[in-house]
Image (cartoon, rainbow, N blue to C red; front, top):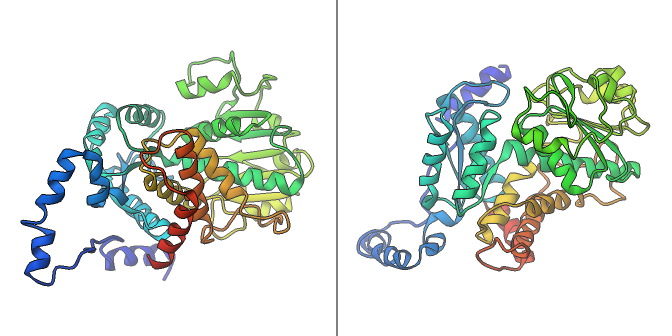
Length: 410
């Protein structure tokens, strides 16, 4: 049986990947009186007096919604809300597996951004956080920005920020191996969609010295013809490609230290990566087929290569990111996930591998490394408290220890 047939059988036999399990057993009449009437009235009235107690007395305190409109699902495109459910459901399973965060998949049947925003906004009382997923660009920017402004819980578009955190963490790890500083290197990001722009912004926040953003027409720079530039791309042009290099990827990649792809399969040729500077770093994150395979990148002389695939070394995947980020955020009841929290996640991931452990095929932790989610959760919680977006103050080391324990028992 091939993967196609096995995947269909897996989903059909299990009727999906999620179910509901009651945390409180009801074995007798007294249990029933606690769980339902008359006992349930007590938390209702406490929450009526103080809404934030809903995080303590209900499942809301550990619940995230994974929400899409189905307009840009994986590499499949606009396949609709029903067809997006397996991905949202899979994401919910990953939340539970990697950080013991409860998550519910929700597909909303609208392509209208305002209608989507209104619907998600009205769901706020049920959740401690919102994970936006698989929404087409540039609409995804408007949706996230509006919801972040209107909601009092974290809203996080994982296709943007989860990917960016994973990519920047891997880049920092690779640079540590080759003894280069982020402030000194030339980085080229091929792809200026949601993931590409988020990677560029996070690289800038982390202190990159020279980054160039590429779209399908070539290098982007301030003053370029603007007919196909969205507002997020435009906001980055004054901070990137300061030398105003022009031309194709083959032109711009010459002499680059780092090349990151969030674009199209096969778009990095051997000739392109061979034109890069010595000790080059190439992360090809297009899924399921990368811009260049790990094997071909290494054969072409790349020092550190990585892809989004699990069957090659240096997998750069947001599975290492979003479970820990939300674990840390909801443990301090954060009102948002800000830039400081994202950077904290970057460094938490990149610093897990010691100098002695770094190798060409090991610059980023494995997604099954059980240290990752606790480290990320603690760092995110600490940053949330420091920046004043946490509702409650807890010891980040306690968050780390509890997250590790949750993973062991989930």
